[in-house]
Length: 278
Image (cartoon, rainbow, N blue to C red; front, side, top):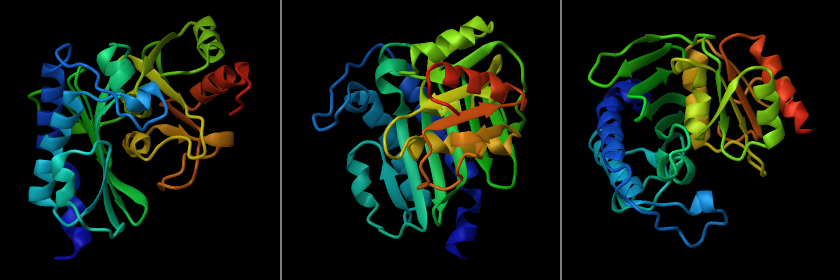
């Protein structure tokens, strides 16, 4: 059996571990403190809790049992990382055990997420995003559609809906953007990047908007949900009105995710209010 064919059921195989990790993260809310990583430059990047490390170990234990030969890009430096010595980037697993540790998890500002993605030859092939507070697990395999499950339930096919008046925006979104969206009657909620990327799949959420300054822009972990949104029928755009890049390396500072194409103009208007363009 080839590596590619063996990885074909990656999302299905990893789903039980995502549920366990999400349940663990949820159970530890309010019981863990921030122990900042000293070498990171920002408070958000420095944020680390015992929940991050414990959740990642749950994911890595399962990953090693099923797919021990993959390369690994894990957010935290936990003991099980050492099990993954492969340097071949053709099959890369990307993990963020708690996306949004500082603002979403510790401060309770909007949804946080547990993220696992599989990239083959530099492009995401499968992805899973769990939203512990919402009790949702979203998954997709490229070209095969997206699926959603609620806690304790079975997976079913998932499609985006242009319902609700909530728009999820990334933490640190310029206030001018949020103000313009509110002026148009929307409820603007800050959220982690993983939640923003799958926003129109969340009941009552209309769209997601992310702005990430820096050379790379949206990180590889923040790109996992874009695959799921695409497979669920969303319009997923990056900079200058272009399709959001499906690979891991092409930089993009913006990520706009909507169910209805006309809602892209609403998000663009918000960005322009802060001089960010589209």
